[in-house]
Length: 134
Image (cartoon, rainbow, N blue to C red; front, side, top):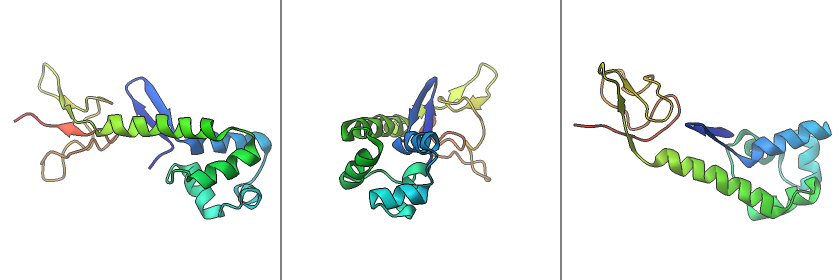
């Protein structure tokens, strides 16, 4: 997973993106943060990278250290999950007047078909779910 998703002109950020910003602002290492929150450094790194969502207990621990409310962390996570959901809604592959194909989200033609020329279910560039016309 990534800590940022872009759908058209909308961007959705994983809460870990904001946590990383907070750590940089406070000049605090992930290990130091993990010690203060009782969250393993492995889990803290996974949250920051966008590979893991926060558990309720982790939100409480992070809120205590950062001073940012658990509701804010939950709302950031919900917004990010909405971005993931929007990518999973299948959209028809874009076809130009010249017959060129592209992703309906990022307009890229990269990774729309596999090495055998068969259509992929997801865009290789942005992960948008694709619907192919027959």
